[in-house]
Length: 581
Ligand code: CA
Image 1 (cartoon, rainbow, N blue to C red):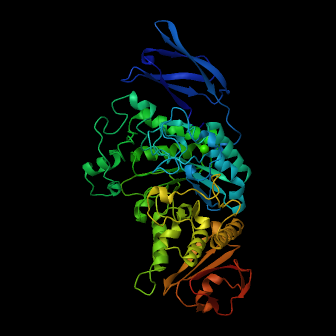
Image 2: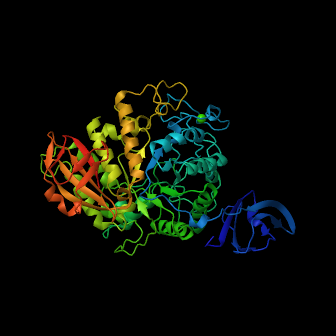
């Protein structure tokens, strides 16, 4: 590793008064740190670049006697580990809530010693989906044209209830047995890679679950924020950027707890900070990952997040990561991206963030009446025009919905024509597109936006389902058509450089019409969105500057040739993609 330090956390009754001893070429003990709890010892090692992989005993000695021997394994790194390439805008990310996608192994639905058992009709209960269920359907994802996979957290969440979502970690190093094993997770990553699919881990360093093993024996008095006297976060995220913010607001936002079952971690404690950073690097190495999705980005200590992102990108310069800042204000999101010059001096190494403003704009653009002033498609135009705030708008992750909001099809009132327009925009504008599972078959949450309704079982994922997205059995004609439509778009996108990496140039949206082009030196793609109730005929002279002298184009969805010297007719409530010849 570029950073040759390695800190070990040893947890064992009264280990704090022991002295570690080891003999291994290239490995030295630099410092030993004792903390308030007598049951912890923190040992800083330095691993010289000359050290070889292998297992060596670490002895813990008290009064001249060895009280514990631990065989520590220094694992070999895979070839080119440091050169690993993260996902890019050439990819399309599929997102899965693993408990709700597919149950590939019903034997792990109930695990002895874990109180939150599968109960498919219970509120916020587990349904039994697992890693095997995802592994079983990698061929489906490949066939659809997805090339990256973000799965909600799979680490152990041994909480009394409502633990399926995975954001209440009770062991940062262990896959939850109800999802599978660490080995299963690594095998999934390898199997995905074989199919051209990059695995992205979902991490959370802001909090853990209240049943985390260290909660019954906290190492220090400052392991948690508001330790012993929890206060809830104010969610005043803008206090981070706000030049007028009070210390009260800054502290309550960043140190307050999300909920009482999720203790807020104090990343200003250097031992905990190291633990969390090493944990991230370990997962990248162990599971050969190609990306990270970081939960609740503005909630941990902001200086810690700067160091965390710096350390990850230092080890893997070609890696990629996306952070969650659920704000509709591009200025707040741009603050976190690497390269941004912030007036308060904050320096981040985070390559990407989610584009929540564009998600919101897309839904408003589709739902609103374009005949009203400043309504409709103009929302997309105005939001993208704020890209000047971002260092790398092309590396924002764009999406139509995710696991925390109503299904896209529900948000647009189950209008198939609008859904098609939305998918076309998502897959042709700038950014790295992400699609939530089930979007391809128009999944909805018609009765409520409770998490259980948003995160429904994927049809075909359970043995008793009578419909299956994977085989097509039982799908409605509308669902089948939607799935084929998306597959066609995804497949085409995989081979089109202009929509993957090209620049964006657009024309001010007016009266339900929005026109833009994605272009590289070699390729040009023109997209026309017509949301009005009537067909529109476009005089192509207006678009001369982006046609670059091309005479004809091919309609990507129909395959028909379109002469560019003649007016272009676009049907009501539709979008066309023209690849310029
Ligand atoms: Ca299962």
